Length: 385
Image 1: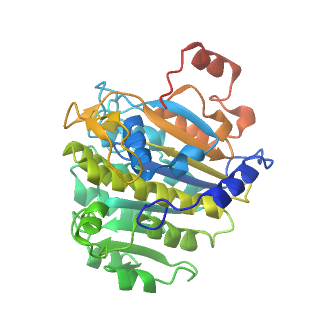
Image 2 (image 1 turned 135 degrees about the horizontal axis):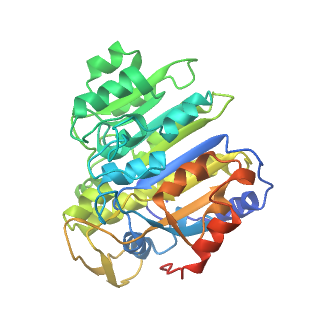
């Protein structure tokens, strides 16, 4: 796929991927972790995008796959706050909560981003939503409500201070505040290209507009250039920044607008957001292809829209589909993995398992234990094509 998510020849990349998959993996926890979240991306969203592309999406080629349960502490249907918190911390919380112990005493929960920082690693958040939106917030902030945008922005700038913050601007996170906190800030494509990714100690931020980034499909339909860097380009720049750390890094990447298109039952927008998400993932895999210290996880926080593909109409044509809701659903979501600890991904898992998959020495992993794996394998997997 090119930068806009359209198909291109994958044979060389597949060969590199298969070669890397057969390489010996480190016994230690992964040094580099890529955590890709397709917000709202269920199995049927993947199927619809694959139908349009006419070939498997990049993450479907990863060698390990499973299903992931998504329920919240207080509801069978999660929102992005609870779903993201479970992925980021390994703990179930109530809907709307951002990485705090609720239910419970309200203590701040350690996130994967904070864990990486404790290990001396650089960190980053990249999203097509505004940066204080729920999913990135669950990795880089703590709040009793996802609506506390000023508090979330304050946590980014004053507490967790990720080295990379790329996404939509506004919504509590201003250019002036980011600059005052020591970030080099880009607000347009030219400024983004000019960001110096190799300056030691520099923190960089891209705050595009005052809300979510535009839909990919809208530019494709109009024939106009996309006004900001694509998600794949933001991932490439983030890797340039974070790769300078000899201790490794953690990068969370969210394809946020898959969810937004699902809420509006807009198939064309959803398909192109999923294709761009796949293009972004391909950037990470190509960077990691010959490494033995890296983990790549791809999953979703929940499914949105109750999508069902009725008929594949061939490459370049949108499939025939039905939608059952404009909200979230409780169905399991896909989970794909490659690299260190990826062998822990199988069968039916819980979103809370991901914290340990990202951090564990497999020799001591609860997820890898015979008892845990036997219990999981006793449940009939219902992996969907």
